[in-house]
Length: 430
Image (tube, rainbow, N blue to C red):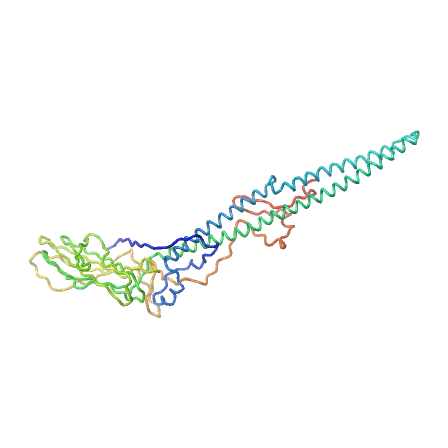
């Protein structure tokens, strides 16, 4: 019989403001369901299911913070790299002044050349006054050219100074972007690791020592009679568990009840039920629930089934499965006599339950995840892989090779690419 069941758990996890970026350790990526034989040793270092849930939420928030910081820096750098950026105004003004000074120097140099040409072109018949005036014009033109050259040199120096300042401003923004890119990548990894750890902890595990059985169910039940029996769930592990037994009785023309304290309560006979839930069942302890099965007097020959499984949870595993046992019985017509035998447990094909794994050499309970893979303790020594990001890290200002940046190294940021270069008049113009 293939039993489809839903194991619903409620985990109380306080979600607080995100911690400092990267505060969630990538070690959460490891499986988090330790062997119960080492529970006392490992659970002191293993986060609870609620803690893993909170860690996953915190890591997601931390990633959102890191992503926003990264994107904000990207936008800032894009703006800073624009030629019309407000931060580049001083350089633009200095560049315009240098161009103007250079043009003035060129005009002054031409005036000197023209003045000298006039001197050379004077005829021999030129008067002394004409010759003196021409020589004075040359002297004045040379003085003006000298002043223009000095002004042009000063303007070039100012332009270079503003160029250097703008370059360093952009380089600093780029360095910060690289740091934020690494932080974003690390936060993203921490988010994925924490989410994976939380998901892994929520998977059902197999505890074969969480055993169950029916006691006193007859192999034959006569129509028109009632029989009392019980089911028992034993916590044979060394873990304190909240037990939520799964119980099912199916028989045509029959109804079942279970004893809750001093009150008999109806039990559905067409689906699985949760009865006898007990919190804090200590290792070695057991619960026993009384059941009464009543068959209608007009019931005819029929077959019945009963199933029992000890399912449970604790702070570390919200879904724990013990072995399921199935029992078959017959419904006999009214007035029949039974042979007095009790129902025997039968194999149950429950594809939804984890399958047992090999027992460890040291003994004890070995939880296995759904599907049979053995669970392993949390790895607290794992170290994150080096993160790479979109924003390139350029190192400290003293170590930044200016020549590399001047060469136009492309830095990929988000969807676009920017080139951080120095503006040099000699390189810009031919």
